[in-house]
Image 1 (cartoon, helix red, strand yellow):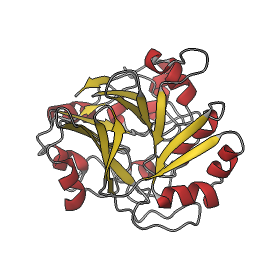
Image 2 (cartoon, helix red, strand yellow):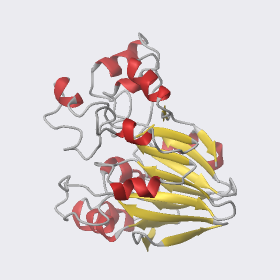
Image 3 (spheres, one colour):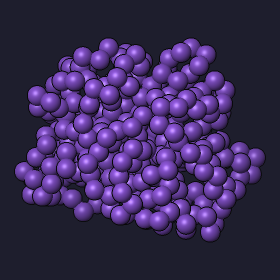
Image 4 (spheres, one colour):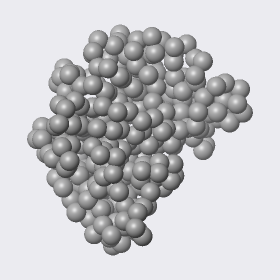
Length: 297
């Protein structure tokens, strides 16, 4: 199984177009070592020919062009077999509209996400006016075959974050995916949105070879301290990295071969290669994913 990190930043990318925080400023003026990043998405394949994209970010066109394995073949035949969604957030779904020129889209999503995209944001209603959409219901805790020995099992990621689309919360509002190569038994977890690493969520990470986990903010009050928002990281649906109940301390004890932070917000100091926070994360065994990272599992 192969994984390609198409985008590693949170919504807005890095640097964010309307932000002059110290991290975005460093990315623009080159005063600190760092790399620009697009919005969070990964691609997975069992044979490097048929690919499944997890979350369709607004940057998906650029991400496809940056990865030759996703380039079209024989006219307009795309190697993208399907899109799997973790939730209905705009930074994970707006890219669906950019895929409308295709012959059709096979979309794996929970009922909660489908409802939010249809009755809430209207993205699914709009998309259906342009191309055929084949919805594959994602059932939490059910093993689903993708083909070529590749399968996934979605798991619920509890959240109290209020829905922007008035479609309610509950099970399936946010999920993570455990991807497994049935030929080797090795697996990877992709969970870009995690509010709390509950015992149930941590159990889903056990025994994985590779973890790609929510690294949105370093501290819970990061956005407040910078004067950029009035909400904590947790209130926005993301567990902070630092702190006694932060993700770094909990992930450090999980014996996965490789662990990465994804969905990193533009305000997070781990985006700076020389920051103490980046060094601490690395010493704790968790790396910071960057666009273009390829992982063989």
